[in-house]
Length: 192
Image (cartoon, rainbow, N blue to C red):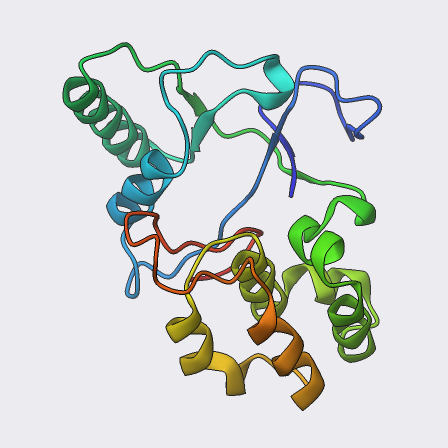
C-alpha cells in the first residue's frame, strides 16, 4: 500500500496532496501476463463509479507505451462489455511512496493480529514484513481473495506455525469456494 500519481514529494496519509492510495505490484511476466493482471484489475472494482476524491481514484499507472496501449485497450473492452462510460483513469506512473507502517497489510492487521505478531517475529524489519510474499498472500486470503483450496495447497510455504495455520483455516473471510466469480488476487506489493 502506498501513494502515487501526484506531484508532492514524500506524501503521508495526513498530507497526501494530489496522490492516490494505490498498490505497486511486482510481477513475473513468465508466470502472469500484464494482460491477465489487467483482467483481474477490471474484475476487482466498479469501473463506472465516480471516485469520492483523488485519494480514492481508480487508476492504472503505466510504466511504458506498451503498458499504456494494453491498459487503454482493456478499458475500451470493459466499456463495450458494460455498455457504459468507464471512469477508471489510465495515467503515467509517478514515484511510488510506501504508506506508513500502520497502513500495511490492512486485512491481516484487522482480522488476525496474532498472525501479524507471528510474522513480525519472522520479519522483524518492517520492510521485510511489507515485502514478504507470504504475508501478502495471507493478507489477500483474509481480504476475501483466493479460496480455501488454494490456501491449503500453499499452506506449507507460508511460514505459519500449526496454531497460525489453524487460525487462518478457521477464519470466515477465507472463501470456501462459494464465490467462484470473484477473482483470486492478493493485495500488497506481492510478486505473483
